[in-house]
Image (cartoon, rainbow, N blue to C red; front, side, top):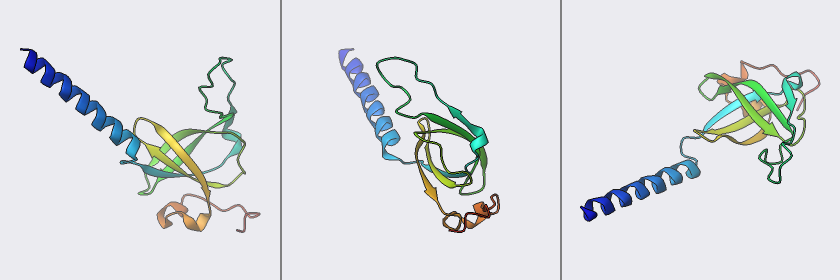
Length: 126
């Protein structure tokens, strides 16, 4: 009986370790692309505690995003500053954790099928 309990505990621990490694490894990352619309920004207020649960993020964007294969999804992500109007952003999204990273990209750096969903602002000639 004790042997079965020990085997069960070891199996649970191994499953937890494997799951943690999967989450942290980045396997299953999906890249989404958004165009910044500053009318969709929201300022995040600190909850006033000792621990900053916002991770230093002062702003939150909730924007329609498109995956590399063209699937549309509304995604919310945080930033420490207001981003440039019309900028194109690549979001790295991981299951369960959500957006773990974002970076600005140029229009021509996005996949061709994603470019058709967005327009380049006239003053953005880069």
